Image (cartoon, rainbow, N blue to C red; front, side, top):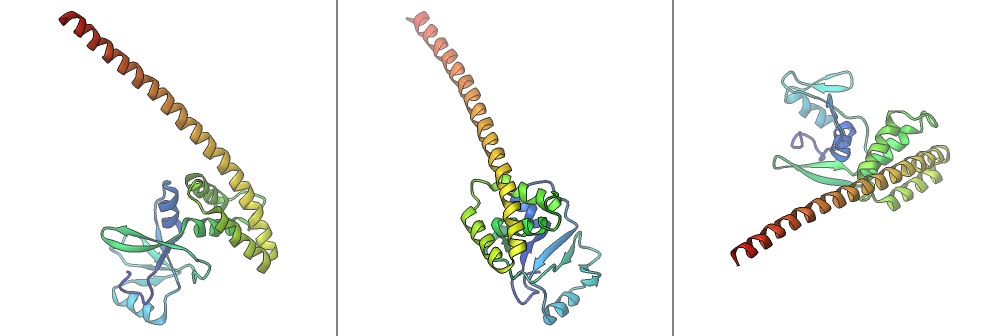
Length: 203
């Protein structure tokens, strides 16, 4: 697919969500940005892909290909190697911002976009660039006041829950380390006792 298109496509949507959140996702389509050029459309057709609604499909391919938007709001990407092929993936932060923006449509009711933003925040809380996210939301506030205000509200609620969840996970990990550490010490003590008994018996 990369060789077909005039610009290297960026993987977005559910596939990117699965990559960053590590959750269970059964792909039905592969979302790519930017929108294909006229030349790209010809190239897609030349390899047997045909357009059905918003999807490009081929009988032998398990997933359809979709180009949901221009991708102009994507500022950060990462290169992911899959089977020796370099794939451009939307950054976790930009995907989070996309889901946060989508969640404003039904705010304050929490929808699937809110859940997706929360899952991304929970699984990447420590490594997420929250300063970058705050900066992007401030930019949205200055250019789209209503949307920016709602994004800030969604972000606050998501971050609050993700912070609590992250602390709970950390506490559980500490308990497990402590528990297994005690077991390891007990095993070491038993082993040392056996060695001491052996030394006494042979001495």
